[in-house]
Length: 188
Length: 159
Figure (cartoon, rainbow over the protein chains, first blue to last red):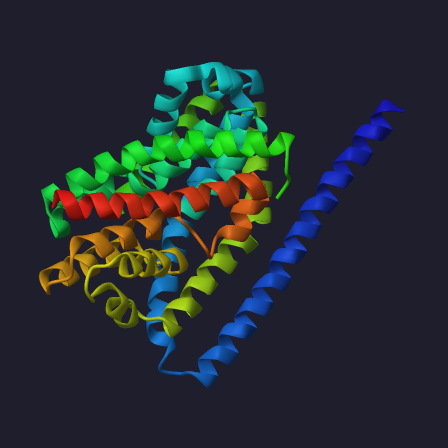
């Protein structure tokens, strides 16, 4: 009986992955088709677009697998109540600092961070900490700051980083506040 | 590319440690990573393709036009909006901003553009909503947009 159930679950998981894989293939075919059509209608327009797609595509290929493995490791080794302790509502100042630190780790564009943020949220990290994490990821990254100093000067970069840092904290707590207030009253 | 190297070494290091502790858990890790990767891949592809199409029709030269101009609240808001809808890699946008400043653009719209470019994402909204829900996504983006304008105005005063 028990063995049977286990077997069932296994085939379920397998089917699930199979379905996801099918979606992925279908998706690839559709996007290739769309790109092909656009390319033939606007041949000279697509140059810059290609360059950007290549840049982002390579970045995702270089970074995403590593991020996925780190997410897998976090899921297997870090119990959910630990996440709540470190990043939950009662985590206070330390939670904010940890979120900031996690966000500034050298990685890629912001959209890679959304799945991580979603996972944090599902494991009961506070909304404020998740938004701090996203804010830091978006605009307080070490490599980015280096490039900025080089092209925009140290003054510009210094002021922007300080102002952004303060704003990220504000945005985080205001978001948490608004979302929780809306929970009790009007729903968007 | 240094960033990619660091994050990969980090992942490799932790995974090696995990492997030395428990083979079973490490196998499970890979399974989770694989299944997450497959379900997220269409989103990543969609975003990248959309960025490509968007940039073909709104190339950096057009963006440049919106960021020059004289300083006013309308101009700053416009710059922030341009940053919101476009997705340009940092390595392109920051030198672009630098050359605009050199050719006489004011700091305020440039700061607004750079801030919304990274913090507010229009193209990525569907993925953000899927992961964080509508409410968090809308408030986060709305507040980030407002603060981008505040940051920009203060930058104008400070610089």
